[in-house]
Image (tube, rainbow, N blue to C red; front, side):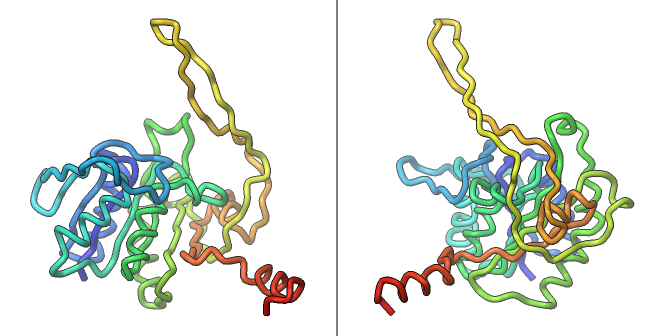
Length: 255
């Protein structure tokens, strides 16, 4: 099995090393193609207005001057075009990608692009916050990731679908298993724009998310991770709200 590993935190991110360990526990044929610099929040963007640079760092290890989507494209359609990967692992992201975050996430986007190319794809994220960023415990992914992915591959999933896995914070020994759960929704969140001034007194801005810990339903990705479990959520590329589509067809006479 050939595995392509990417992320959105960049080629030097510690979580990428964790994803590589997970990949090497599954296969001896592992390739890494990751962004040259951090691409958090890039979502499913690709670079169309500038050239891409591909830098070889070591054997089967490359950095790309672009987004996670660019990386997967470069890996699958250029480097490995004659023998594409069988599995794409995107992550392990610093910080969870739960609920509303999936629409912003470059980690999710790396798996989405693999999904669009017809390749089984998994997004991996490790829960944490700004206070724990410098000493985050990556052991849940290292310890539980390989076997969980083996089980998912054995079970299989349809084309057009990716798997979103989030590991809870804390040591691997405290993980309370894993749960197949739907995507949740943050109920306590605000977006803030902070204005600052540079040395020439010109304004610049930072966008930030401020969240408070809520009490989400247990049967959700948020509830699982808050409860110390690994959340596993299938996400599909087709964003159609089918139930509303049918209601509108009936009400508007377009059946």
